[in-house]
Amino acid sequence: MLARVLRSRLATLLFLAAVIAVIPFLAPSAFYLRVAAVVWVFALAALGLTILMGYAGQVSLGHAGFLGIGGYAVAIGPAQFGLHPVLCLGLGAVLAGVIAYLVGRPILRLKGYYLAIATLGFGVILALVFHSESQWTGGPDGMQVARVTLFGWRLSGAANWYWVTGGALLIGAWLALNIGVSPTGRALKALHDSEVAAAGAGIDVGSRKLAAFVIAAVYAAVAGGLMAAMNGLITPDAASFMHSIELVAMVIIGGLGSVLGAVVGAAFLVVLPQALTFMHEYEQAVLGLLIMVFMILLPAGIVPTIRNWLLERLS
Image 1: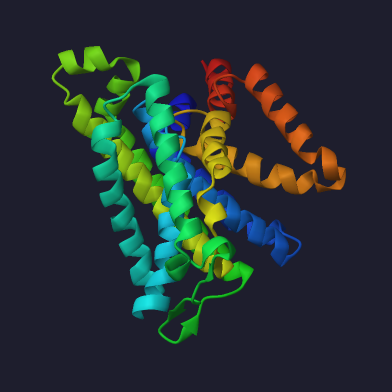
Image 2: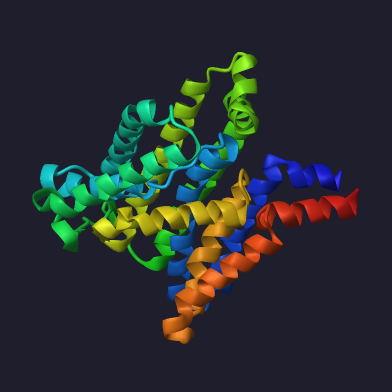
């Protein structure tokens, strides 16, 4: 019975909701709520990569580009066209999905290293566009993002953004869990095991891979829009190569194909650097060493390793 609960979607959602609900009572100051909100945003983006990498087995090294699309949509829409930031959040997600569809059709025909390099090139192109098109994006310094106002209420403060980003993460987790058990999700997992076998079973490999890429792009764009609105600023750094690598690392460290793993991986790479600030110039070296140790000791990822250990104890 307990083993079945550990595998259930409801248990995952309830656990995540409980964590989100409890943290404000344990946080000693608004700073910790702010850090937690950043974790929720990056976890939302990592959930998209969980669908792409964990379910479909496809790698993207330029995924932060979609973060930039969502962030700049929320910035440019109100500044240039007078649109509401919430509307721009949705438009950014649609734009990211359309671009992912158009770009994904040719590059998803590639496999392995070739696919990784192609997505890397795409991310670099987007970062260069955000950096150079200063009349639209503000150039290297970025641009201010209009504050979100709903029905006369201005959304501001770490506590308010904590609940908004936490709610968005719960919705994203619910969607990802349902995709995982849907016919699309089962087809994607078949691709992960063997594209040849999946094609032999009648699965349209190309369209399923493209669907995963588009879904992951929409997740990232929504996360980027939330981050930009929360910070009140967006810069080309949001679409940098390092952010793409961090997103991939979050998914791998937490556990490929695990919804909770995406959250744990995001928390690991967001919170740990904050805890290592006292080490100053050695911070990045220690962080890299810890990541190496975790991957050597827990190659399946943190969450799958813990879950498998519990299932063995309960069986």
